[in-house]
Length: 204
Image 1 (cartoon, rainbow, N blue to C red):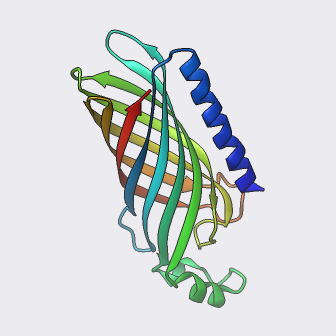
Image 2 (tube, rainbow, N blue to C red):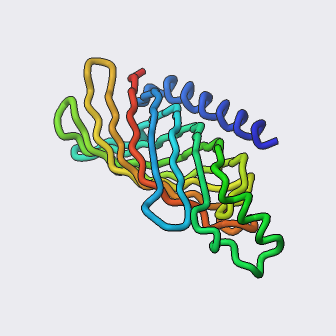
């Protein structure tokens, strides 16, 4: 069911792209690859790498800044391991079995649809800086001690820089990412990671 929802949302993204072209708005499409790791802690280890499609839609431009909407379907591959077995407390049902299960190294897939808004400041005809905030629904295929399997959200704040070379734009974006399910499921402590994206964009 969830994959069907993501497919429908992806079709909506393509429809928005077609609409933007018809209206002669500024549109960029591209892809990005990123890497991340958790902020240092004693409870767990979490590393990830991911692939994104990117759709930028300019909504307004002034003399100093421009405003854009960003849509990013994402496939995230993570590895996770509980390091502090006492994170699972004895008053939790089957705590010994859960300690054994959660302290094993796990491979996790996350399917995300990031919806963002950014403010861009041109530095020259070729370069610009931007600030980005995004939030999006996410499906994770593996339960851990910190997050239930299934539906969650991925929240991202980032600062980025772009360099334009002819019709291609190079995008470099350090970011902070937090994953949780807003209390909609039993486990919700989630993860917070520092990440960096490398992207290429093409103007239409």
